[in-house]
Length: 84
Image (cartoon, rainbow, N blue to C red):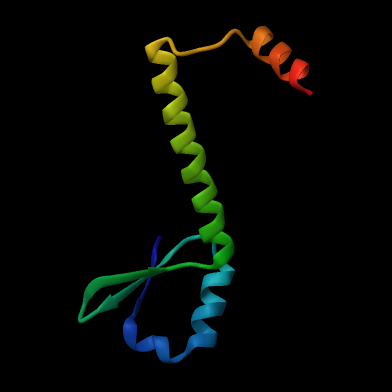
């Protein structure tokens, strides 16, 4: 279940920081009853960005595979060893 807090609670920055660091889920901040911001700990942010980068690389790889833009693994490894 997502955690939702009103923006007026931002006055308690230490409390907000503790809430963010106790969970790996984002916290939704409302303003006048509507969604306004999403906050999370630095650790959670970095983990999510790493996952996003992985998903992007997988998507590129899948597109390359579908186009037939592939290399033979043995030849690629052999080429890498030759360059060392």
